[in-house]
Length: 468
Image (cartoon, rainbow, N blue to C red; front, side, top):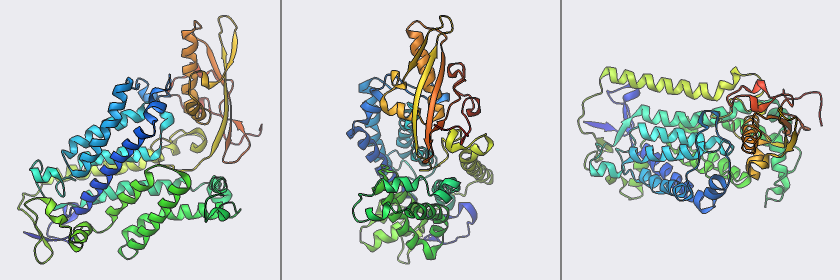
């Protein structure tokens, strides 16, 4: 049969076939960026400084047993992600490569919670989608070799799942900015921009008192509306140009790694599904030939579809159910902090996986008071007793990492012959330009708390009346 590129057919709804070249481009660019990210990690020496150099790591509460591999194997694990990313890009054993990359990537990120970044969580989710979605039927070596059935189309639900995952990042980032600091104080954006006043061309504007407020409100408007502008065909091209300018500017000002390029590449999926095939044909690149023997375009711009039996009704219902569950989790995980006490920006409870991007600027001072109740001996120790400088900086401003560091201090004293010591924190944090105040209750023995303890058990409320 013949199916117009991206137009409606007799097969309606979520399983209506549309051109698969846009999801192929998503796979190609995402794989290339995954390979580049791993290569960049090795070239900058981060395998050594972040994984191998520390004697201890601030593990996640549910993954306390994760440890870095010995040096040669740790390097091999990260280097292996380069060819795996390239395999995803060219569509060579795509699902196997994506599964292996996901396993290695998740393992590396679980080694130390101090390394957590929200865009790492997006990459993790996107890798999961590459594993389960049919992204290799078009423009892939798998299709050419017959490992998967060559197909120029995908069910439209595949396109919408990829769009939905990107939409969650922007919308949750925008909702997170709906707070008093961002809206009325223009912080922390004002502080960040003022510190970059020496930037060529725009530096004179960055330290103006109004710049932080304009940037903050513009950030909210962008995050909360860009998905809508991308979905509306009339505004799509202009919206994408704004998106590119926004991410390039943030990349230039804030040095946030490959995340801007991941979003620039990924959001191309918001364009009509057939755009890459039309573009390659217009440029004379012959991209349509990469789909294999079947699925050749006709002289009328239509795609010849090989006959295939439709999916059963029960299978379709199962796919829809799983997709709905995925959608619910995409809302529940980032918003779970609403069910906890305190301000998530201060307590960090519910921060992981929330896409709360660039919302806080913290600076902290942290020391631990250690007491041996059996002998009455007391010690004041710095977190660098068990941590590197970069780990200590994170432990001094994030409550869950303060708790993890306290447990490491207790373990270190136990190795020195002082079992069951009490560890209390003298912790002072400046939050979004405020004067320093206590983050951790100094009366709480952190060593006696479990790693999964709620923040309310040891974190003091924000904006206490006593300051220092």
